[in-house]
Image (cartoon, rainbow, N blue to C red):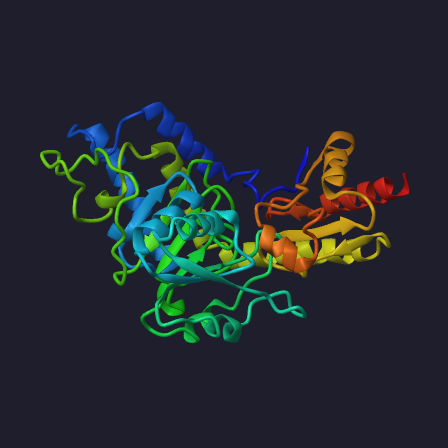
Length: 375
């Protein structure tokens, strides 16, 4: 099957990632829970992943890298662990439900209020000035994605940070941007960065992380064993233990470690390759009269489109059943972005590429779309 659903989860992993996961499963020791040398060796590799992520994203130290099972968990820890009663949050219509639903839950519970920044109707992207216009005296945090999972649009994060007061925190969702675009926490001024390991970072499902600066002190979302301070009935007061209750997903963390190492020297080349693939797809799709495009060439590998009269989920279903091509139709868990794009009624078909894909595979997609249109 031709796999064009990499924005949902990476379909192909580097060989070094597969080798690491296989080795981790064979070892089966619990890192940080025992004193024998096998457990200590596993703990060292877990620590190496913290170092690798800190280096890759120019974070704030290994102790401020917390492992999660996905980006959604990281975002929940960031939002529920930092926000307090009476806080105001600014977010955007580009956000995934993993940001919007926690905010809406706390709003309905009477804890916080939030405003949603619209995108510019011409650029289909965010304006720093529009975000700044929503600031209130009690604005505590601004939550902005690093890249839209719907159409691959990349917000101007540095300009957004400069438009904010120093005391307002910046939370970024790197589910789609991580591993596709350079993200420098210190240079950009990102206080909290939520990462999905299983997409552009080349890890497996079950891998994720939250990186945060020394300007924030998140409270725990989960409580339990940490392998440290076992005599105390309270969670440890130091990171990362304070936010990591229970056994960590060792095989997933090792996959993230090797995926990060794989990206370290290849990020620029991979971004250029994926941009070329999206540009080629956009060019070929533009020649199909009855399809409408919603993406421009981008390093996140996302090309969103729809047929003028056929439902997006129908098109994606036929691509799968009749042509062995994996895409995704529908709303992609980002309803406000579809509302902004005018596609809320039917959603979009999303083809999402990795550097493992080829122009020949895109040709097959275009031929299939043309055939679906004719019939």
